[in-house]
Image 1 (cartoon, rainbow, N blue to C red):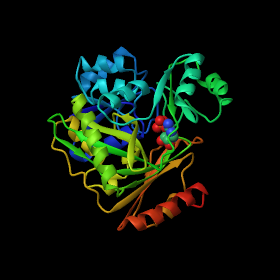
Image 2: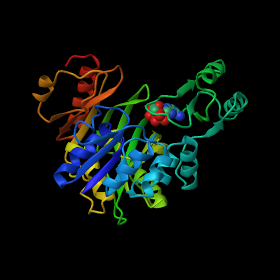
Image 3: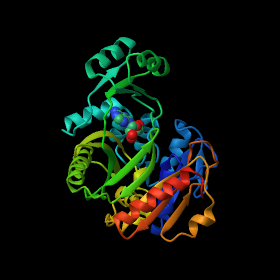
Image 4: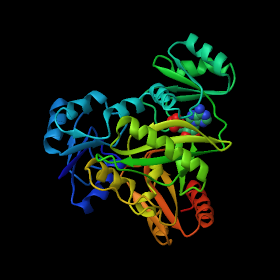
Length: 364
Ligand code: AMP
């Protein structure tokens, strides 16, 4: 049975790695040659909008999924007319537009931050007057890892933010002075069977995820996050893995964004959960029983950005697992990650803080 994956980045690669033991085959579609996924499985190389390639992918695959959020929804509709595709394209369309995402959260009574749509400089001036400073101006579409965003701290920042981002649909949001950030990962199968992973605590720097620790012990926050993600999954009659990221302020959740796919904050599940998010995504889209989402021990995941550390030193450490995505180094690029597993949350926290410091200071 062949699973098609549109986008052959590290998420696609880890899906394939999880699927081979289940006897699955994979076929990628990506515009770039030498992708992380294409190093593992056959790839159709060309644009995401090329009808001939989309037809071929649909023809050769029992089911198609995607590893990237910014694939044109129309291309995936083209595939959906020819074969089964999951997650639902309505969820993808919502996740592609920050304003639609916020509308959905409001509709489902999931708390989110105050915001306003901004299309003109006059809109921005009005939004800043209404919502106040500091705030964040973001592109509604095609944003990721903090790209297409500007923080406004004083009135004088307004013009510069407009100059750098204006001319596309934008959203202005209040800046949330959060205590910390979390994400929750859920999975729902074609049969309606649903499961959630333990809560992730996430540390971002310059908009990019650096560290995830899970399970994060915050029972009230976790219960709310699980309630909210179940609402979103039910709303879309969702199939596959879904992630929602939240700010936590004074013990309350504020939804920031959702991703209709396996997520960077769930990479720890490869070693740290009974069934990884990648395997469960495949099980879900194939209508197979879901695997146990329970954690094994206490995990932390550190992203490796820009260049890879020396691998021998890392592999000598007990309970440390290295994932190299096979990408060429480039400043800031996600090249791999490390997961460590520990017997207690305290040990995990101490060790992951030290590990992050060593990675940052290139002492590995
Ligand atoms: P995003 O692309 O929306 O996930 O933003 C990336 C990161 O920037 C978030 O994980 C936060 O650390 C930070 N950030 C984004 N929006 C806000 C906000 N409204 N208030 C405070 N921090 C934010």
